[in-house]
Length: 433
Ligand code: HEM
Image (cartoon, rainbow, N blue to C red):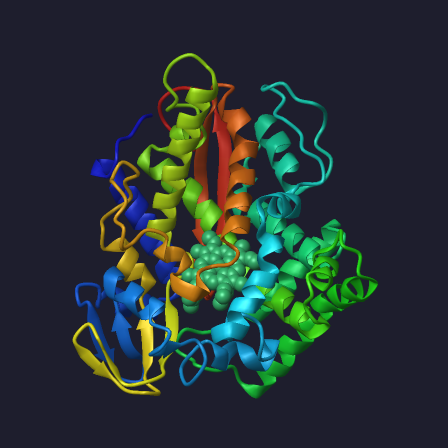
């Protein structure tokens, strides 16, 4: 099927996305969406909610008046667990210096190494180089190729767990991957949108869980082996304390977002008829060659960006007001809280449509803007690319990637599918199930 942009196909995408969002936040999500036509709205006990992309960008770039440190900011949540200097609760010259120091961890080659699977195996039908042996993506490819249904949410969780293992300097064995994911989820699962802080017992528990995870990171740092991320951080001049904070921050910010996004991307591509173009089967025009490959990659990139825009895996950003000022015509005072409803800002443009020209105010707002712009974006994109690169050869064999049963996750911080089953169907109309 080659569905167009929004049209009739857009309905399915919207319905499932609504279910995913409401399963995670049955009260907060409808409340935030109800504000979507108001550029700014003052909500008692919450703060000034911004739903307009241009105003959101102004706030994020204005470091004189807005901060991630202070009352109502994310530092209230994370500092008790991670300590005071972990990027997302830092500002100014110190923050910029730490970002610069961490830059090489997210260089293209370094992120490819972080997402590298244990052994890359091609699809049988697409000319394989052997049997899948270990690694979430090769196993997924082998099972799909054999006609089995695969839970993509589980695969991406395992992939994210393997990345955590590499970040903390652990070898990604199955048990280590499972334990790392469980630890990360145990901590993020405590956070609730309506609560500004964790309780004392939650903080104690979170520190214990993260302490277990970073124990290996500490050891890798002390050994100084530069083939590990903590060892490389030491080589880059970070103190042990800074390196452990950064590792903790990466695990907490980078795990659920990616686990949320990839299954939703595939679900949206399925629901809107963009799957073939996402997987590079349909889109490159002309004789095979570098030009066609570039055009396919460009099309894939547009589908991914548009899916990021409509899913907004990190649905809100918080800032504390540093000094009195005006936001979208409303006065705010030092100590007030500004809640950027990124989900409203990004989705105001309309339903999923990769053919729509990008709106400059909205572009990449799902990764933030200004000095705190997502440091892990290259890693996130490499993880997405790794899944799509694994699936593309299967799609090239003429079979269609079909999304089957799915179940949204309840009670999670980042909206996601708990299960999303995919299978390969022979070329032809209609879904497999
Ligand atoms: C699709 C996936 C992701 C999305 C949508 C996303 C989104 C964001 C957003 C919106 C911010 C800015 C928050 C603010 O200004 O308040 C941010 C910051 C950050 N992200 Fe991501 N993120 C993703 C994946 C990752 C990954 C994989 C990592 C990996 C390590 C990561 C690490 C970080 C860090 C360290 C920061 C804080 C940067 C700073 O404060 O200087 N993110 N992310």
